[in-house]
Length: 335
Image (tube, rainbow, N blue to C red; front, side, top):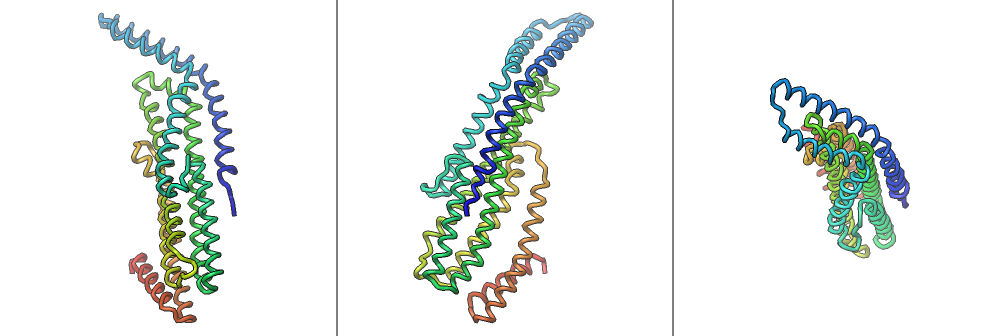
């Protein structure tokens, strides 16, 4: 099943939001220029009045400041192009380059991705091969191993598809954030002109960095998924696979899936903590509660399932799995 989140969500948003951001920045240029002129005029009048009262006007300092204001006036008038060429594009290119390096490791070369959007296609390709491999187990290893692989395979497949959806969300919000700052770039250049408001402009740059790092950290999780699926495909021999090998391999993939979902959900908080930008802890709180709740339910149901299957089949593998799940569940609950 090919969802193709790249064409459905990411690319339409990217094309539309960039045009809108550029148009918005151009419309704000005039307003920002007028406000800049007003603020500079007020500043000059204040400095001259303050100097006359004190009897000491620092013309050298005022001259330096006027040169700075002249440069900033040029930046405000051309803020849309400057933000696009010196912040937006370099930030995107740098992010794509880092993501490409990370995913080339995760994909073992042949599954490397050029950018975050390309990574979505690669994950879907890997998941499709994973389903095909599960079907091969049924054909070559028998129905019993297929039933075991099917149960875990469905869980792993849905978890990895969820990871793909979260990754697509991070890419989309990353593009939206950069585009919003692009649209507001005339006001950000205006804020940078004065020491009282300069922190807002530098905060916007930290916000850009945090958004970029969110995609980078998410790409690491996605690379781990691709790497794990690659190892799974190369390490298992379908013709000679046993019940125990299937259980071991799919249990490992289930752990990778849960860990990847968790870190994808808290990727934004990690990235914003590194960049120094402000970030809401709502997502990470929901992530922790969701993972804890789902883990508790899954382990409880999983333990019951292992116990029931063990009674029917007498399989030592299932008996061992039930004991492991039950023990972990007791520790999880604090019993």
